[in-house]
Image 1 (cartoon, rainbow, N blue to C red):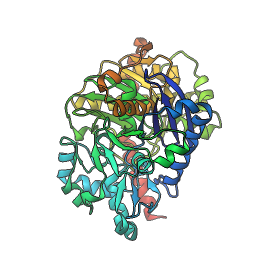
Image 2 (tube, one colour):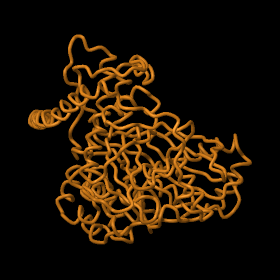
Image 3 (spheres, rainbow, N blue to C red):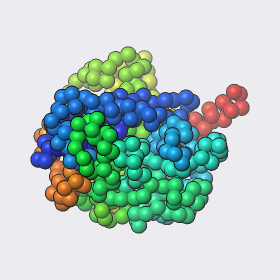
Image 4 (cartoon, one colour):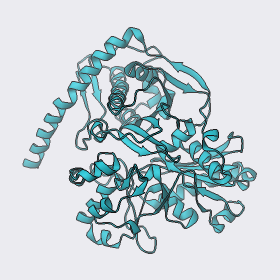
Length: 494
């Protein structure tokens, strides 16, 4: 048996597969996000451990014999988080998460230094790890002075599991400290943020062994000795391993808290001006590109909270048949945006509201707004040299057929729906655990699932969608200028 542990923003999922990669069982533990100030997003690492213990306890209750047979563990986790430890591995402050935008000015200052884009292949986004450390240095200098280790969230779990300070390439590429082409830490980039390479974990590939499970945990969970813990992957690269998105031209669209358009590459193809991420993949000598939007299902969940209706109730009101866009347009920038705008300060908007704008019309606009944001990422990938002919849909939002029809029509390409099964980050992590423990050929393990259904673009609505997308595109510069003015007024008249 092989175990995948995925540290998500809202919880930890533990998933068991057998040697034939059949899913045997899964369990989870919940985590809350702390938002002490506007634009801030934090978690306590102790909650990650608690949630992992809860997930493992759930598996042990339902599948004790299978859990006892585990030979390899793979890790996946949300990226970019700054987990700061002292010399005794004690956590110094809550982890600053991927969707925290407090370090926007520090990110801009680092991005103005040409070596960051040249070496990392990416814009320095506020959500990345490096600007968070500069913010800590400027605002919490006592804490910064005590920092001995900077770990990414899943690698803090690894430290707890194995006692090792280790990371891998796909997650580390999102820190703004990795020379992405060379797959190595850059001493010059670290120095520019007041850090040294000795404060970073050692680096391995995601398919390699990254420690063994501590004997006390193995005993408590009913496992044997020598359980290998793989290098693992950042959540999107792990999802790609789960989906078999590892070969040139393969792609998926993920509708989770954030939205991702992910394309695998056999070579390193940076184009930071397009605001596309160019990261290492979890496999050796492989890279990937991503367009990332910060609010996908998060936008629908926000709408759900405002209306008092569940997400499924809201989408259910739309039915199954794709409708032509109304006059209402939604920009899903609830916590800023990455691709293509790199704008941490911008916020969302409904435009075109009228007395006739019903709840269903607003729901439709929210789904379309996310679809058009993903279209922005598709255009950015084209500018970075990658053309996609189809994508596979994953994530919680992909359960809505209406939303998938909207995305297919907005992108103008087919969207494949995999056969029933769990092919997300936890499954990809379990596959990584299998490869690390057995030294199997990754390409023979990371196969694609069978396609159960394909959602085609709606040809009769293609023109209406294109016109609405162009209106969507024109809205951002208009609200950006207006929002900057309102911010100036708030500062002038607090």
